Amino acid sequence: MKDESRRGFIGKAFGAVAAMGGVASLIAMKKTWDPLPSVMTAGFTTVDVSPLEANKLEIAVWRGKPIFILKYSEDMKPTDGRSVKIGDYYFSVMIGLCTHLGCIPAYRNDQKDFKCACHGGEFTSAGINKFGPPPRPLDIPPFKIDGTTLVLGEEGPEYKAMMAKAGGA
Amino acid sequence: MAEFKQADTLYEWFDQRLGIDKFVKVMMTEYWIPKNINFLWAMGVLLTVMFTLLVVSGIFLLMYYKPDVNMAFDSVNYTIMQEVAYGWLFRHIHAVGASVVFLIIYIHMFTGIYYGSYKKGREMIWISGMLLFVLFSAEGFSGYMLPWGQMSYWAAYVITEIFGGIPLIGGDLVVWIRGNFYVSDSTLTRFFMLHVLLIPLVIIGAIVLHFYALRFPHVNNEEGEFFDFDEEAEKYLAGDKKNSKVVPFWPVFLSKDFFVLGFFLLFFFYLVFFHYDFAMDPVNFDKADGLKTPAHIYPEWYFLWSYEVLRGFFFEIAGISGKSLGLIAFAIANAIFFVMPWLDRSPMVKPANQRPYFKYWFWFLIADLIVLTVYGKLPPTGANAWVGFASSMTFLVLFIALPFITKAEAKKVGGK
Image (cartoon, rainbow over all chains, first blue to last red; front, side, top):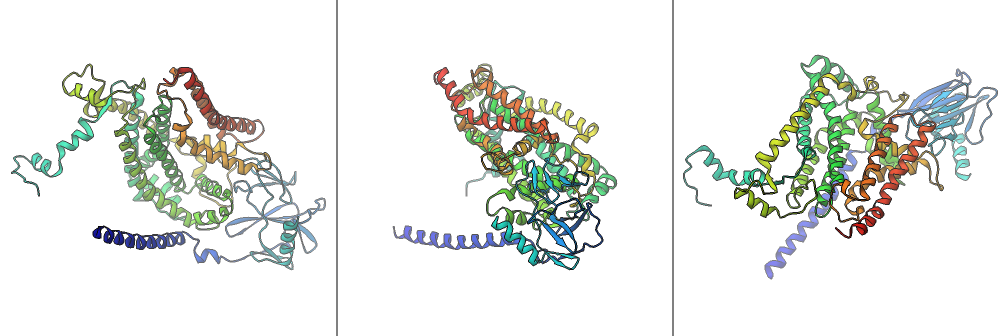
């Protein structure tokens, strides 16, 4: 009986040590798979939009993601809360990944919309989903406007206003 | 220590120390297999051989493959395919083998469903087998990423993106799995580790469990007959081989298996040498480009049915988005087979053709899986999208209906 309780104590003590070690190892293993600091601090992308042509899609790269920058032509109406005025022109600035499963939709400049070849999703020129499986409009990356320059990765007042509108709607 | 007498032969020396005689009896010469079986019972041995072939060809590929985004593509398509002597052979064995292993897994799995080999004591065989199916799927997916072609990249992208559908943690989880905001070098290297070490280790463990799970309930037979294996084994050992319902695993059962294996290997190496192209998608011979989605993305043939279930729901139903519905259906499709033993409420262990209602269910399921597979490869536009939706719904309805169908069957046959 006495032996039993001593063995029981040793067992419980070992269990406690092993559990602590186990939890500590899991944390370490989880963190090993986290993105590296160099990835996290990956810089900002700057795009000068003044030379862009209307109704022709420009694709910039930010954090490995394609960013759609589309300058509107005369006949394209800006969409409230999604179109951005840079200088004298309106633009769409969006992450160019289908919100269904992340394929890159193609721009059809005759129909002025986006079509995703993977599962047939379609978006308007402002990135609003209009057909197929995409559950929401194309995401808008954090941006700041500096004259005719677009800085991706920084939250400017235009971006914040846009997000506030999206949140309030 | 036990008393050891002087060994007269080398064999005796080893037998004293390792108990070879006893081991061979337990594992081979006195491991009993029913006599009343057909060639479909050879699939387990075929799969063991295929797994070995994949490991061996993989070891040779591993000596030249480089898990780095800048080098991976060329290390496969230039170094292994063009420079290494017989490098093409090992790659083709590995690629064709990965495809064929799924063909045999499906035959093995549907043999089990057809003959009711998943219930009445055989539940653990079935569950460990399904676990192996999931592990082989993970192994296939992680391996497909390694050549770093366009299909590798976009399959990796789309499949890791699926985890983003999990509520609350989804977005962070995707970044954690990839080790970056997009599929990148960290993703490639960690999936390389999973493919060549961690998943194969777990697979080997699961194979041992699968074989062990067979020992107590024993292998099923063509008529689903239950009999006393000890009694039948005694008859066999006493010399009454004709009336005994069992044969030893070795040499009797395996000799039949080797015959089937012979035919299979001819077929397999015919594919490896003359028709390897079916396992080599041309799109994957373009190097991965994260900024250019291929016009049409599809998985290898063996994932097409579940891929079609994933994208079958392309519109909102009752306020739940098509994407969420697809993910839920996809999760169900991959998990539902695990609970087969409990969805089948009929006590009958018989081949499907002798079961009054189950036979219809079985052939409906096969037909639906074929439709899903065919449409999984087609672009999801127009009528195709609706066929995808209908066949995905059929798949779910079949499994919802199974308990009711089998319950009715149990009533009809009166608990037999």
